[in-house]
Image (cartoon, rainbow over all chains, first blue to last red; front, side, top):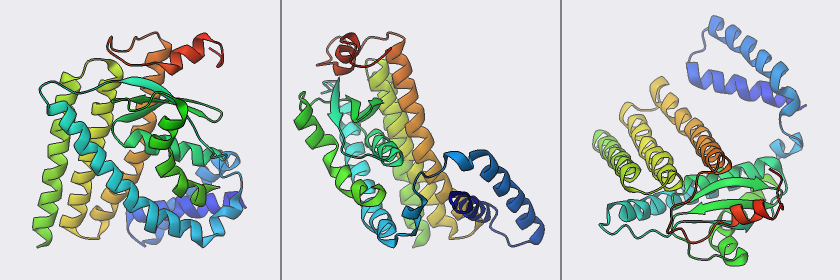
Length: 162
Length: 114
């Protein structure tokens, strides 16, 4: 099951990369997709049923991606301001936050999202705790840091990956 | 019209790239520099790639640019995470005016192994 999904996904990626329907290119793409499936099939997607639930795609593409792009842009302007300001108003530190996400892919995307919004950088993850380097520490305790950094992404990611 | 939007996007991207490079020089320690180096520059590169996609239209070149956006999202975040974790494990100190370091405390209290 999960191998079929992986094969189809890598084949679609190949089609997008080459952007041609020439039969020779299709054959080579099928060969490479098969190779990828044989090597990585075991590690792919613990619960493949999630791929067939359309509301997850709706949450990911229609709601999460524009929200993430907006957060990214806002935070980038913030960091650019801190960098260009003559006195450099930064107060860096590493805080600990906690996530309610259970699945591996959910935690991965949460950590990546936190890293990609400037000002926060995930340093390590242990079970449900993430260690975040923060360029301007607004809250040192766990609850408030979690509320500021994690909650805004979590409410989307729970619907997409859980 | 399409050309104007594309060139504006590329311009914004280059501007963020420059801010990232300035941050790389000005900020004090390795973690803050990673913040500027990996993220400011990543968003700048996204701007350039999306600008290219708008400029050339939805053909083979534009689709490759959009795929590169997704690949950069995963690789850049993972690389900066690995660099920060490696730096902390090899004993690199935070900047002297840093506020707190929960990771160090938890490692000392043996809440997390090694």
